[in-house]
Image 1 (tube, protein in one colour):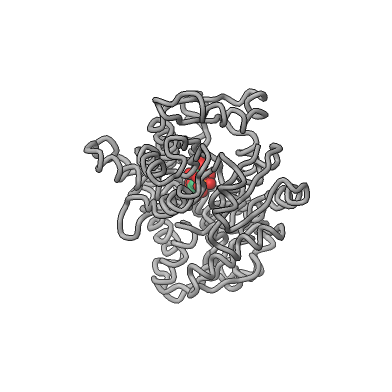
Image 2: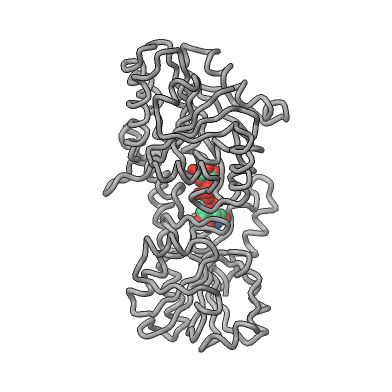
Amino acid sequence: MRLTVFGTGYLGVTHAVCLAELGHEVLGIDIDAAKIEMLGEGRVPFYEPGLEHLLLKNLESGRLRFSTSYADAAEFADLHFLCVGTPQKRGENAADLSHVDAVVDTLAPLLTRPAVIVGKSTVPVGTAARLTVRVRGAAPAGEGVEVAWNPEFLREGFAVADTLRPDRLVFGIERDRPGSAEGALRDVYTSLLTQGVPLVVTDLATSELVKSSANAFLATKISFINAIAEICEATGADVTVLADALGYDARIGRSFLNAGLGFGGGCLPKDIRAFAARAGELGVDQALSFLREVDSINMRRRTKVVELVAEACGGSLLGMNVAVLGAAFKPESDDVRDSPALNVAGMMQLHGAAVSVYDPKAMANSRNLFPTLEYATSTSGACKNADAVLVATEWAEFVALDPVELDSAVRARVIVDGRNCLDPSVWRSAGWIYHGLGRR
Ligand code: UGA
């Protein structure tokens, strides 16, 4: 099939590349000419394992191209995926839909043939219905244009695998137009459906809500275990052992029960806020008021880590050298949007510490966001003369750190494990003072 993908961020590039990998002819569109040029040359503008290899492969096959031209897009295909960002509005909790609206407003007047616009971006419930009216009003093809929603559940760091082997596919289809967009989407994903990937076909509103609810649930699960970590801290219990014990209950499950610095990134934080804001607009704000608590628990973890490092340094951060290992919001990503690691690094600097940050992939993005922090080029460089070392992102190379090797770099053998990813006994037996979150 011929398909277009609007937006070449984490979601759009992965989707375009994977659609080509599934055998379709794909045209990726973005208004950012520099990004389009980079992608056309086979370079991915962010770090995502395995993606660049597939990009090159599909560019070479001729199935994948990139362009800035909406006219080319409207001419090329009749099924258009919308993958642009929906960030948090400045100074508000609601989602900023200006990018989504801009794509639809620019594309609609060019749609002279019947077409389907398929949204993948995370949007407040009701957006698809609103866009349907808007696009039909502006498109020469009028009623011939359909809007469907096919929410995306990929995780950064596993984006390719999550797209080519998703847990499920969800199609939101207009209630009074059953059949046509659903058929087109079934054709797009034929190979996944024949492999047995579960499919849920529903209305537009339900499909939008599936995504908001999934992220709200994941955020709640993380904040639940972090709230329990606070109780563990007050009682001397160990949250990691507790989480293992909870996880054996199949109804609960062990994943997303890792207590630590909490969630960040470009999705969970802004999505729970937008979801609660939308509930308010709908007059049911009480239904999601617990998400504000989920948010507060999450943010408290960042303050807690700053306090823990200060305690580990003898009560104050003033004049202390602190090494921060990890800046990305999670491992296998260079994304620093709302990164707990960088946030904590910035707070410790404000408390008077000299902070040196090292991340295997996120250095350039970190420098752009927090130019005033000091950046090292290696773990040992960041740890030079450190009074405390904070592991803020659980990259494999930090999990595998040898305390004996690090010994010669630091001024004091103090390690704060912000992700509970280290083995305390290994560090303690090497003479280090180990601090975890929610554990003695
Ligand atoms: C999240 C969802 O997991 C995806 O399903 C969704 O498609 C995506 O948002 C999106 O809306 O686009 P992602 O932001 O890539 O994916 O990252 P996650 O793996 O969910 O991790 C989010 C944050 O939670 C990270 O900061 C991670 O360190 C933290 N986390 C995760 C914990 O603190 N504890 C855990 O047990 C798990």
